[in-house]
Length: 117
Image (cartoon, rainbow, N blue to C red; front, side, top):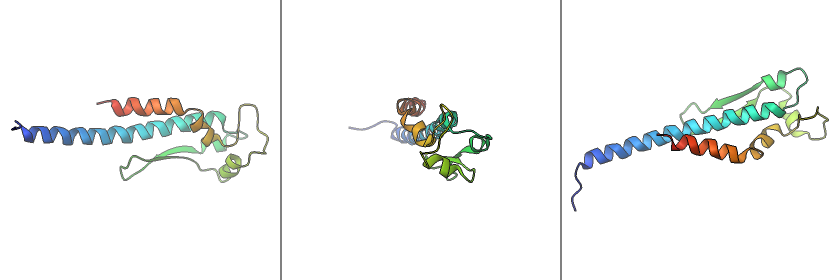
């Protein structure tokens, strides 16, 4: 069997792969931004410094990777020490909870973005 336009088919496959990589990277960034927003809704707030220190950092090498970080010096303590008392609706483990509580939505955001062409 002979395939016609094999060169065009190979180019189309290569273009599709490239687009898929871009879609996956964009999906990861969108999910990270969503997690940041959801974590900021439950992060304990006293002065607002911790909440305002949140940011999302996409990987600069182009890999499908992003980090959600809180840069306030005490962020790790507020996140990890569960015995602290916080105002209603504000919680420790705010990053972890933002992910686990929203897993169906996270998967939906990722799926919809990856499927875009």
